[in-house]
Image 1 (spheres, rainbow, N blue to C red):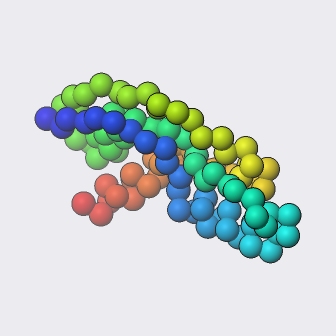
Image 2: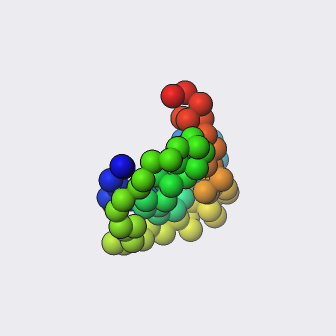
Length: 100
């Protein structure tokens, strides 16, 4: 059995690199704050995705958690950041499963 709790706001490293690339030569970006966060995901969702992708039969126990607060990423999207979203999370978990 796998016991999961909590969750958090996530961003893929490719999205962070993209934001840096977009901001580095952009004079209008100078001095501004960019919240680089894609979405909130609870650990139950991650565990279920990992179980599915690894073809595991593990029992997953816990209660999905909702975020306490949200972070506005409008400024980073205005800069041109295109977040990879849940597809990126799924791809990352697939890569991890291949390594184990």
